[in-house]
Image 1 (cartoon, one colour):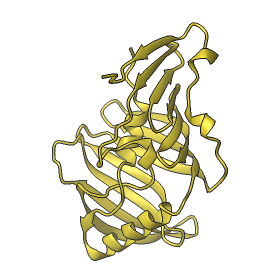
Image 2 (cartoon, one colour):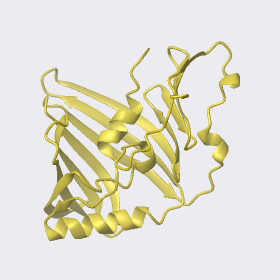
Image 3 (cartoon, helix red, strand yellow):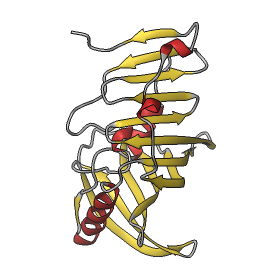
Length: 217
C-alpha cells in the first residue's frame, strides 16, 4: 500500500487559517489574506511544486490541480486523485490500481486541502521580511516559524501579492536540508463546481482494489 503523499505535501504548504502571532506588519498582512480567501465560495487552482535536496543534488518537480468548495475538495497530484465530499475521503492510486477510503480529519486545527488557502490560525509565529517587486508586481515576504519544534520543518516563507492579497508562492525548509517550493500557476474563484466531482465512484473503476480504513464503529 503506497503512502498518500499528496495531502501531506499540501498540508505542509497550506494548512489551517492565517493569523500567526508575530510582528504587527506580518499580522496585518496575514489577516488581510485570510479575510480575502474566506470570501470565496469556491476555488480552482493549478500549481507547481519542486523538492530541492542539496545532498543528492536532486530537484524533483510536479504539477497538480485542486478544486475546493466549503469542506469538499478534489486534489490531483503525483499520480494520485484525492476526493472528499465532507464525510469520506477517497485516495485513488493509479499505478497500484487501488483506492483507500478514510474519514476526513475533522479536528479544529486539522490541516487538509479543504483549508489549503487559509492557513496558520495558530501554532506559528510570523515575521515580516521585506517588500519588493517581482514581475512588475509588489509582493510581501513573510516567514512563519512553527511553535511546535517537533514538526519536520522549521520555517515557511510566504510570498504574497500585496494588491490582490493572494498567496503567490511558499517555500518550506525542512530539518533535513530539503526545500519544498510551491507556486500558484493559475487561480480562479467563485466558478460553478458540481458537488459530484468530490465523490469517487468505485463502480467506474473495474478491478480496482478497495482498502476501507474508515472507522465504522
